[in-house]
Image 1 (cartoon, rainbow, N blue to C red):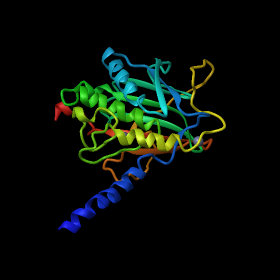
Image 2 (image 1 turned 135 degrees about the vertical axis):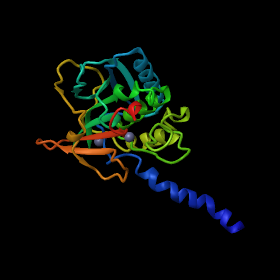
Image 3 (image 1 turned 180 degrees about the horizontal axis):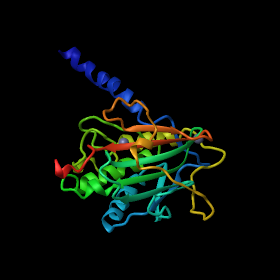
Amino acid sequence: MKRLCAFLPLLTLALATPSFASHSWGGYHWARTSTPFTLQLLNNMSSAEWSGFLSLVSADWSKSSVLHTNIMSGTGGGNCRAKAGTVQICNRKYGFNGWLGLAQIWISGNHITQATVKVNDSYFYTTSYNNANAKRHVLCQEVGHTFGLNHQSFSGSDSCMDDVNGLFDQAYVSPNAHDYEQLVTIYNSHTDSSATVAQLLTGAASYEEGTDVPANFGRPVGTGRVPEVLFVRELPDGRKIFTHVVPAPVGNPDER
Ligand SMILES: [Zn+2]
Ligand SMILES: [Zn+2]
């Protein structure tokens, strides 16, 4: 028994390593010429409540040593059109279509070029989901995906990047230490010769529209989650759009 106990820390370490290693998704990251860098979160929220959650989420992620998030007025309009170099963030009643939140991330090569985050008020204003912890958890997770972070899903993770546990739990509304460590792993590895991240908001960038309709998310990536939580769509010009989903059962949960 003694021998077993001595072995346990090593075993724990070995078990922890695989999930830790896969905690970024695909190695995708914002190109930037120096680290730390600032990422603009564009606030298209229609309510003071959601703007409040965005402030908390931005402050949480900005504790990172490698990236800072800055909230600016949104320019995405009702459809949350993406703007190069930034993350547009929106809430709206998108319908009872199977998701509480989604992050859509445009990829060119290995680099993230723009992203949108949407939270679904159709669900969040039902009695089943009208919960401050759930709203903050989903927003925190989707914003985390736009940095290149994947899930950490194990009981006791106490991370908003957990897609299995803690939706309504106050312990799961913020990133945990491993999330910040993973950001260091992603963004301290190298810098790029040119940037995809917009350090400032310039007027000239064009806009692109994503989709909030699940049928248009593309093919499932095969994360092993049921229902699937990550989809990819290839664009004709070689770029890809990944869609991270926090799923919910289709239909109004209050009418079940
Ligand atoms: Zn790079
Ligand atoms: Zn997720």
